[in-house]
Length: 145
Image (cartoon, rainbow, N blue to C red; front, side, top):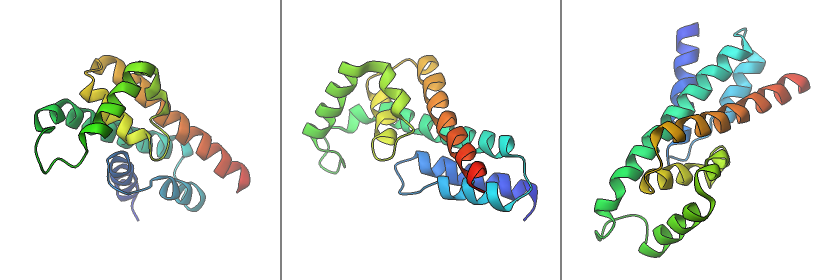
């Protein structure tokens, strides 16, 4: 596989994994770290960019979600959305440092949009969390290789 195809594939998987789609980018990153001759820093950078941009899409969806909240087809119940908003109101922007975590991370980025967190604060916190996870994962994978 060419370098461009490798990086593009990793970017797309990381982007998709940051969405509410059931995808995981960690196995792809570890596989590429162990099986390819691409620099670890470049793979971590591409995965981090894709994952952070995917979270920005979640944020944008969160900004738009309020207008559809009372529709019958809306996928999240009123009580669940209220709970998420209360949780975010309690913990605030610092909860975005948990955006790397499975299960809770992606919904957190949506709730940040719903709660109108300023985008200029959202991006650095999410980028730090996402990049930090990939750096730790790459370090562990390369130590065990």
